[in-house]
Image 1 (cartoon, rainbow, N blue to C red):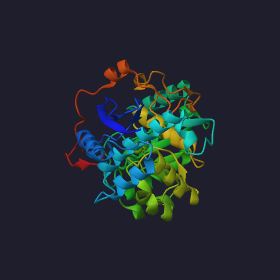
Image 2 (cartoon, rainbow, N blue to C red; image 1 turned 45 degrees about the horizontal axis):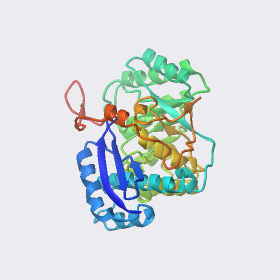
Image 3 (cartoon, rainbow, N blue to C red; image 1 turned 90 degrees about the horizontal axis):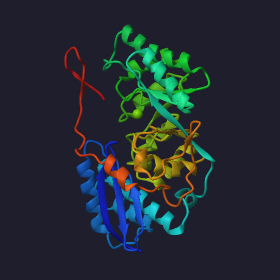
Image 4 (cartoon, protein in one colour; image 1 turned 120 degrees about the vertical axis):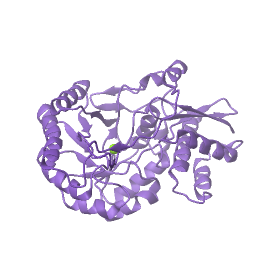
Length: 374
Ligand SMILES: [Mg+2]
């Protein structure tokens, strides 16, 4: 079997759909990360295609190592995004060629279904509470919010702290103690402000606080982690085993959140999970609204002993699949179909095709127009 062609479609869910064609008629799908540079990722896929076209798509580790090791700078996110999407597609083809789901190729499943959490938000605490309750009534047993009304300053006012805490408090009161609440700081606060907020949020017993600060400085994260009893999660921007090594070795987080669309792919996600497992760290993979990425992540997590929960936007984008992922009671059923477990609907693809590329956004403080992280 030989790879013949790569086809990339930008999706309205800020994702890219990669379709890899073979000379035997089998096709595989992958989900490379888009960022604000979807066209550059597409170009990187075609550059890798120069090497891959004419080669057997089932030689996955060999292709991955060749493309990774032959790169002058191995940790380039755009290169890893392209490589991740290609890897998903090759595993999809391998699974289809053997008529087994990808999770079977990874050693079989460690669980019968995959726990997922949904996002919630709003403007006022009342809206946060109502939207969280709505997610619970859809079946979710865990929700995640980003409770920041405005950009947060390095050290902000007690009123800002109160308004952030009020949003989380409103959710906890609305959903009760049986529902898990994740809180995403989305790297928008300083370590000093993060420590202050974590102390105030501890009484609401969140499942985790995600990205309490920027991910580039692991010692800053470690200081935050040691200041609180709330489990700290991070990793949506990190790539490969090497990108997670310092966090894991220093135990700077309790939960890793690699994104299958740029961490290096399904096999790399398994390797990151194994690295984490040594230190009793759990995995809660990141995902935006892209359903192909979620489908790929589920395959990896089915075979991961230290899996905790998967991010899942729900609903949006499911029209892309002939048969949507089976969500029920806060879990996604383990896909039983070969490969990544879905078929792309051609009609759905037209509906989900983006007509323009994503533009860059910059959040600024409303009173002085200073930069704020986003
Ligand atoms: Mg996040």
